[in-house]
Length: 121
Image (cartoon, rainbow, N blue to C red; front, side, top):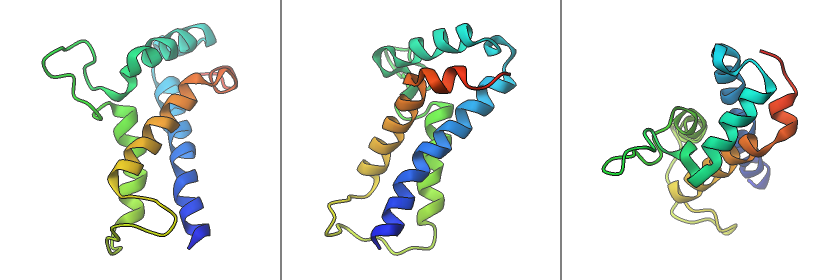
């Protein structure tokens, strides 16, 4: 069970890397390291990467950005067909933990100079 939980947690990071690599390589505006870094810095400011429309004060769409949803889908795919468990001895809770891991994974990738400079578009 502990190994399965570790795999579940690790999948957030690998998915965030894949999602953001696909985004950067498919968008001609972010083909340079400088452009990717500027975009990442902008997304990290006030955690904009979480919101669908961070500029909107009325309805920013928390947890609805493309990167966030695609990374969070990892959790949904992992739990399909499994029985809901309210709490486990290891302290993992349901969606709250998955949302937090998603935010941490996307933030970590946007913060990684190594990631932002390690591939070419």
